[in-house]
Image (cartoon, rainbow, N blue to C red; front, side, top):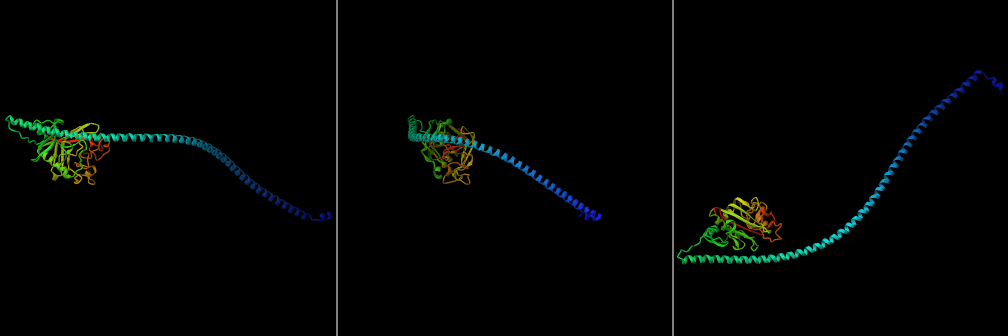
Length: 385
């Protein structure tokens, strides 16, 4: 064998050695490349592993935070449950107390209703007594008027027996009678339109001499009347009455007249409104009312329209309200304007029932728009009295 090797030519050995070296070099180069690639892959794996570890750490922190928040929420829920339990206990206690108070209030309400019924019965009895007393008062006033007529007759008889000529009394109004020496309030006869008319004369208020054309004080006369009834007049001159628009027109056409309105509320407070000039037109002009020169204690301004307001009744609507009929809504006959601030001919409401009554006897600037008054009177007197 050795001889064979020894016999190999040197250049062949050299070539083989070079080939082997080349192969070895290639292997080393390939190994180095593989090592480099392995290092790159290892670096990528390490980077990926680091990122995963970081994410795991972040997730762990988030989990810990969520666990803490969950624990906090659980604690708050427990506290809220405890608070809710306390509130439920308080609510149950309050409901129990309120049930007891409600029962007590119901008993008190029943007791008050019983008291109210008793008081209403007492009020009704007092109203009946008031009507009887008013009726008796009217009878007494009639007797007074009869006595006055008897006195007048006796005076005339005495004048006749002493040789003096008999006097025939022809009075134009109550002021004329007052100036003739008659100073007692009551029934008088005056000439209106060439006809003797019974009227009530107020000889005491503000110097006397007033011819009364409206009186209300007990609700005994119904003032829900027609145009003709308000024109001709109704009621009892010695009690509640309306003299009549025609008579009032004829009376005040004799000269310049003043108007006085006397009012009283259910608390006994008196008030008045006075107008220096009072003018009433005829029926053809719807008995229009004109007033001037207001004064008085029933408000700082007039509650009665003063600029030529027509008279209206339930069957003749002359008011200034375009979409309503004041005489039907507020009742009675009156100078309503656009329903306005007054109506002394409304429904008569007794005490206890006179509040919040828009259709009652009202004078806005005295007791407001819905307080129904106790008594009223309207009267005229010559301006130069």
